[in-house]
Length: 126
Image (tube, rainbow, N blue to C red; front, side, top):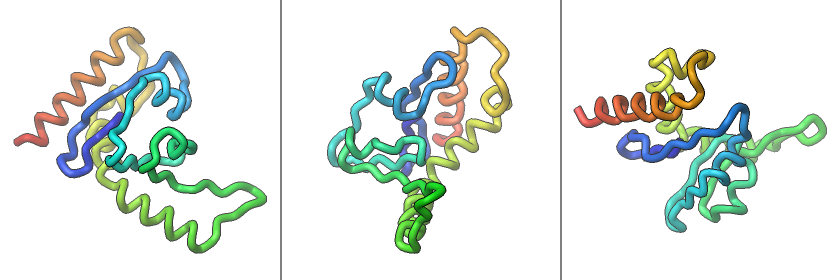
C-alpha cells in the first residue's frame, strides 16, 4: 500500500497470492516512485534503497550485532516520520475483514480491499 503522508489518503495498493515478502510484492507490482519523493517504509522493505535512492527503512538488529545508540535514534526518527502511514493502516483495520484471517474467495480480496480504501479516502475528504 502506498499512502500520502500529508492527506492521509491511500494512493495505490498491490496484492500477491498467499504469503509474499513485502519487497518482493513491491517489485512484482512494478510501482516506481518519483526520484524526488521520499519513500518511508518499515523493516520489511530492507533493500528498498537499492531500488529507490530517497528511501528510509529502519535498521534491524541481529543476534550478534546489536544496534548502536545512533542507529536506535535514527530508527526512532524514521518511526516518527512514518506515523502517518501507521494511522492509515489503523483506519483500514477498523474493518474487521482486514484485521482478521480472510476466509472468503481470494479473487475478490483485492476488490474488497480497494473498496474499503475508497471508503477511508472518502472519510478523509469530509
